[in-house]
Length: 247
Image 1 (cartoon, rainbow, N blue to C red):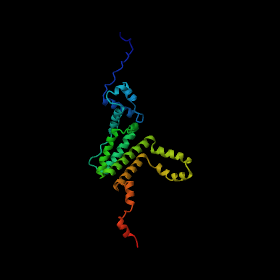
Image 2 (cartoon, helix red, strand yellow):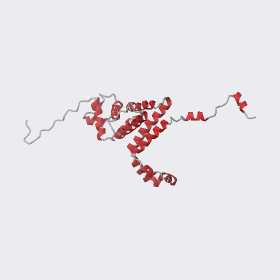
Image 3 (cartoon, rainbow, N blue to C red):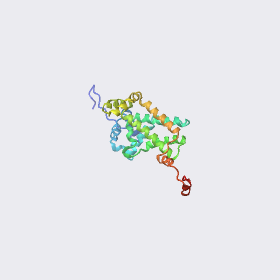
Image 4 (cartoon, rainbow, N blue to C red):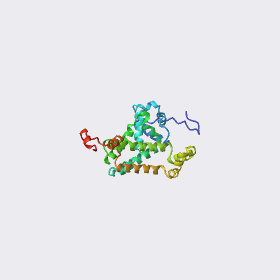
């Protein structure tokens, strides 16, 4: 039966795209591009692909594996490769700046770094590049471990704070709250607020990077236990103590 003249026949619903790991990750990244801060859920990814959520698990062993794949691609996407022939300070600047930029580009991936107390292998892969840079700076063993943790957590922590509240918004909020601060605290903070207002997120992060490089160039600080050991005078053997006593 033909449709009446002037009428358009109803369009049949097209088949959903064929599912694959790449298609699922691509759909998740498209959601991130459209709404960078919206929580990334299986229900949203499945709806974008016009399938039921259970269909996604035919291609991934579980939710952790799915989100790890999305996080890995999001951290790689658009991030310039660290220049292999650059000096280590330039490499460290590039690593810190590129990780911060990507985390701020997609704030929704920040909770995926350590979701439910589990560190994502995708983040560990990204952080492994930092280890190689610090090794080029001459760090080894405990010094390397401390510097790696310090720089990785500083970079992620600043990005988390900025994603929650930008630096200008932080300063405006602090100014609004000064009236409710103790007189002593208000007097101290009022002196620095104008200087904080002159900073933006990029300028502050540049300061963090440069201070990090300066600290590494001066050598990694001693651990507290090492400082205590070095500050204690060495005890003389018992036979030499008597000889050392003043007569």
